[in-house]
Length: 412
Image 1 (cartoon, one colour):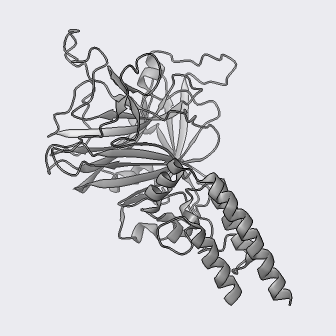
Image 2: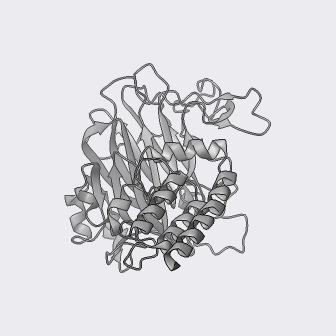
């Protein structure tokens, strides 16, 4: 009798929550969920990221737990650590990681412009995902450039500056997950800063009449609703680039997630707006002829694919031009900038935040029960795109996940 009452109450709760889910789900959210569900969360298979580096989909992994700073060059192709003063290890790790430390990068005005770790892969890929954790200091300033993914034909074993020059489609492309200072508090708001063969000039529509020989600087692609980066807190950042399917097709994409939430995706038709100089304007007075975004023609040759990653903390303009926030009451260090990195993963599939549970023990009591069902449904209500709640493993986020879990609980 007791078991029957529990099952009845569970079914009643499930019906109520299912109705709530149906109200929450809109056509746009359904589409976004389907896009995410097509790439189930890799991290969920490896709680704490333990063993994730052995997965066949992982191209590169770095948790900063091995060796000293001088040993980073054994795993990374190029290390920029001027005078050995930029990089150090600190005894703190990303949430959910069983590690003991993370990498600190420190930029100091008058001494350096920050530093970076640069990785050249053995071959190129059509699509890759890069996930990392970062934590900015409580007084962190704005950022000039941050973490990037790119492709380069016949690349040397070190980064080469090509600022202001538009790629040809046969040589290179790249995009940084950057932090813009416009309308944002330090360290900035999350956005893409992108170079590709059809990028626009900041000067004129043609980029040739203002007399500057290098008129093409990165085009910015940010969400309609700004996503402010946090200080003092660890944030999980993930982004992807998908190369166009053929040299004559503009179906390339890029997208990014913050703490497992899809913040922005740029793909054919994903946004509507008007190109004005170097920005695709989705609102405002320059959005004079709204048209669907055409997508990216990243590459015009099969030889150009994704093969480079860069963990970068670059502060040149921040220091040189003395960038300051409009709100003078904000804690702000204009001379020293600090950020921590941890658990960097590059893979051919969506990775997601570090998983803390084992399997589907959502309430972490060591067994499967109604507490797990309740916690899973709360997670789904909080974020309809949370891939950790794909209980039946069918690659879709539906009510069937909750029904299957309930039936398994009943069966014992």
